[in-house]
Length: 445
Image 1 (cartoon, rainbow, N blue to C red):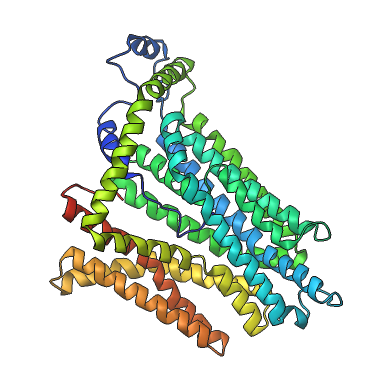
Image 2 (spheres, one colour):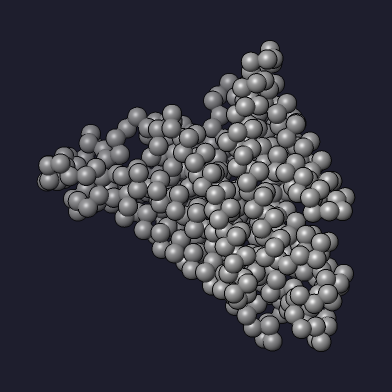
C-alpha cells in the first residue's frame, strides 16, 4: 500500500481549473454569506487562522512514515511465516523456515504464487474505487477519504496477520481476501492522490516540489531505519516486528482521522461557518459534478484517438508500477539463492533505499544540470534522454542480479536497478510536457 514509488500520485486533471480558481479565493467566503463576517467578528482578536497548513503537512509526513515503517515491519517477517507454513504443509518433519527443505522448489513456488497473486489482488480495489472515492472526496472532504484509505490498509494488514497466526484453521492462500479490505478507502492509489491534493491545497506552488521531495526522502529514510529494526526484532521473536508494524498502521489510522481537527481552528464560530458552507456546496455541486465527469470521459476518448503516442507513453506507467513491486521478489531471491535468512535479506534491501535516496538527492540534480550546461538539447529532449538512461540502467541491473554468483555482484546489480526509480518522475515530466504541447493547456498530471 504505502510504497515510495507510489507516494506522489498526481492530482486529478478534472480539478485543474477549479484548483486554479480556488487558489485566488479565501478559504472562508465573505461575499455571499453575511454570517461569515459575524463569525469572524466573534472570534477573539489574535486567534489562530481557520486553516493551519503546517499541521496538515506534518500529518501527511507522519502518515507516510508510519505506513512505510509499519508495512516494512510486517512484510519481511510475514514472508518468513508464510514460508514456514507452506514448508510444514509440504514437509511436516521440517523444524522451521531455517531447514534446507524450506528452500525446495515446491515451497518457493507456492510462496511466489501466493505473493504474486496477492500483489495482483492488491491493485484491483484502487482501480475499481479510485473515481468513486475521488467524487466522494469532492463531496465530503479529502480528509475523510484519507482516513478511510489508511483504515482499509490497517484492516487488510490485520487480516493477513490473523490468517497466518492460525495456520491450523486457515489456508495460507486466504491472505488474498485481505485485499478486499482495500475497498474501504481505495488503497494506496487513493491515499497517494488524496495526500497529494491535501499538500497541494495548503502549500504554495513555489514550495510544493520541495515538500514532495522531503516526503519522498522521509519515506526512504523510513526504509533505511526499518530494515535494521526488522533484523533486530525478528531475531528476538518472529512475531514481534509484526505486532509493532500493526501498531504503526493503527496509529496512522488515528492520525489520519485527526487531520480535520488539525486543519480547523479552535473557534466554534468559524467551524460552524465552514460546516454550513460545505453542506451548501455539496447540494449545488452534485449535478455539475456528473456533467463534468461525463465531459472528461468524452474528452479522454477524443484525445486518445488523436494522440496514440501519448497514450502509449502513459501505459508505461503501468509497467513501471509493477516493476516497483519487485522488492519482495528480490527478498525471496536472496534467501533462496544465497541461503540467507529473511532478516539478513532485509538488510540488503536497505542498500536499495540508500541508492534510491542518493539518486534523488545527488545523481538526478547533477545529471540534469550537466546536460543543461554541456548540451543544446531542449528541456523535453533532456527529460526523454534521462528517462531512457534510467530505464536502461534498471534493465541492466535486473539482469546483473539474475546472473550474479556472489552477493557483491548482486549488490552492484541492485544499485543499477535502483537507478530505475528515476524513470517514473522523468516519464511523468516528459508526459506533462508532451501533453501541454499537444493540447496548448498547462498540464498538472
